[in-house]
Length: 100
Image (cartoon, rainbow, N blue to C red; front, side, top):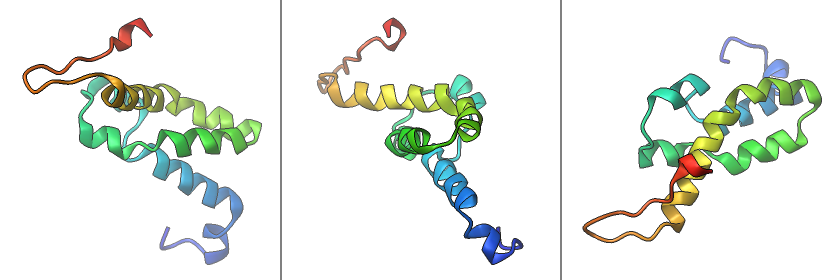
C-alpha cells in the first residue's frame, strides 16, 4: 500500500477492500479447515463487520467475498457458542456445531 498513489488508496473500492480484509483478519478460507478454534483467532475475526460490508456490497464484491463465508461463519458460530454455552471449571460444555 505504501507504494500506491494516495488517490488509489483513498478510493471507495480500496477502502471497502481494506475494511473487508480487516474484518476477516489474517486468515483465509483454507485456514479454517486446518485451524482449531482458538480464542485468539476467534477474537480476530470481526464477523459483524464482515456481514455488514457484505450487505452493503455490490454484486461483484459480494461474489468475491463469498470465498470467506465458511471461514467467517465458522468463527462467528464459535464465538456465539463460547458465549452461550455454560461452562464449569472442570469441564467446558459446548453446543455441537456439527448439528448446525
